[in-house]
Length: 307
Length: 107
Image (cartoon, rainbow over all chains, first blue to last red; front, top):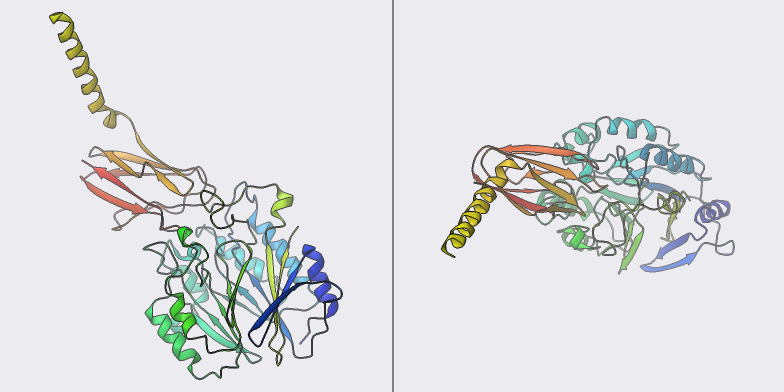
């Protein structure tokens, strides 16, 4: 497996001009701007993966005239990484409102990513029209009961993909539901507390901004069962911007969209796509790369934009 | 003076008569803007057609709370029209943003 080397860190940093690397070690999290002085050689055995989110294929508007084109640009960035990602996590809203043909376009574009495999969880845009029928026909295979949620292990790290958009009613927030929560409790029961955990889902598993539905009503029930672990990283999408929070040994991170940015919580009358000049918008859409180094438990999250 | 009063009365009656016909004569519409349905409550006569127009960049739906009617995702400037043949109170929401809620009253 390739490793995230000094050059890789430098290139990541160069994309944004101010890449921030988060490092979690033994529950203590620190961040620093990635500079030549701070870019370190990673030990052999490290791996990295990429999070792509909110591709919104089918969206067309002033915020982005061609969401397929910006996704392709993000894919080109991923393929130019000096470290080939072990796999890709797509954290939902592949399509914009299940527009006809959108799933096909995403699948076709993602075939071009140089990686072994892509894992998916749905966003509300992928399932709202038909209750998830088309999504699960395409991506349900290999998930628990064909319902879309799943877990897998990669080099000692336990990855958990959760579905929190299929009961998207009531107060307009994400929900996991009893069945999935019971599965989750069993799924991690046998794991030692030193096992690094990565959870990924579409709607944030923390209360980013409930007034806009940016939260999951029963997330605490899921996280409660994960607090015994020394390192938990929660990766979400949905809100089209990077936000981070640390709570004990749990680090929360939301990813940018590859299609268009959304306003910061409460900063606008509504959470609609932001209409801003293209050059500026390109600094607000992009991709997340996560580097994991076994043994020392550090986990570096680097967000890279197109601009 | 008496004559003037009756003229005023006739004029008022005329206005009331016209007003009561307005909902039937004018197509009913709901505008979606900034993640809100406007008006949030719309009263229409039986048989009325209601047309929703999405003015947001983000897609929205018109989804009946009881499943009685529903649209696909409306993109910017797209419309959806529904005819209400029976009296009743029809609650609906946006399936993509369920905090968006509104009601059509048919009578």
